[in-house]
Image (cartoon, rainbow, N blue to C red; front, side, top):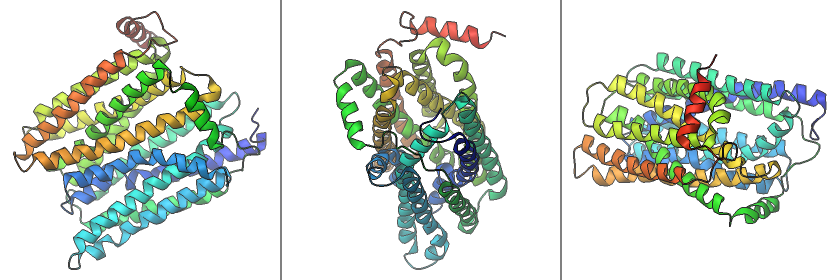
Length: 439
């Protein structure tokens, strides 16, 4: 039984949250990722610009800290609603870009507006997430917690997949800026409608874990533990390598393989398929093999993707198939790593500390991920004037492969998984794979 909501509030709140989730995923799918990157590339922006643009996705998780601070003075629903409202106000700046570009010197103004819009959109997402987590914690109480969370996951992945297919079908091979803005306008409208659903959510009777001091106390109590320091070292490597890899696969598809706009956006849907496939695998393997074995395995998969890109970026041939497979596999490994990493991390500590230590996970992952995405673009801009474009991308992906290889070593050095402490990584995987194919 939840201490935050009554049974009736849980039932009504879940229905409202599902409506919010449906509208929000539509908006998020259009205003982030490949769509906004392709839009910016049409303005002939630099690689470091794309890196900065993609870094905001990761940086949003750092601003959950600000949301936690605000929750000492505001309710969860209010923090959630304020964060979500401001993020869509910021995104509305995208709607004026076609009018700005047509004027003298308008391209520089337009690129600045994209950064402000994307930055505000993601930063205030982080602020709002602090309130969202508290509300979901209450709505997910009871014996049917798994069903509620599963429905959320199915809604998010299904709508993102259908949305990606729809955008790819309607966008065209070389869409004008005005066509992108039509998609943005629809997404922003859905975003503001989602805010109306947030305001209908029930307010928790008792705020749980909103005290920022509790976060500081919990972090201080574990920061000197060797197992935590090893994990944070691995997490930093994971975030650094994958943020650059994911961010610049789309740039590779446009600038080296010269793929059309609609196919580049379709890669989002293909990536969502990979994430869904990873989720189905994780559901069976994470308990059987243990989280550490999955972490090592997924890191090796990402290493294969990075090495493949070193050779693929030297040729324009076969770009369609190479990019489709790479997006599917990279998204599957990235999603699987987050699930396995969180399962391992939370397994180290008592459940009462999960919320505050989960915030530490977000801050480390988000800050290092933001640095990784930006440094990837900066490296490309430094190398490209000295070499041909394909060779510059080879240097980038070779650097990413090196980071991922180091991270594989860091993952092997993690303390044994508490669920499978006596199993080697290889033996744990064999057991998990046998269970995966067992009827």
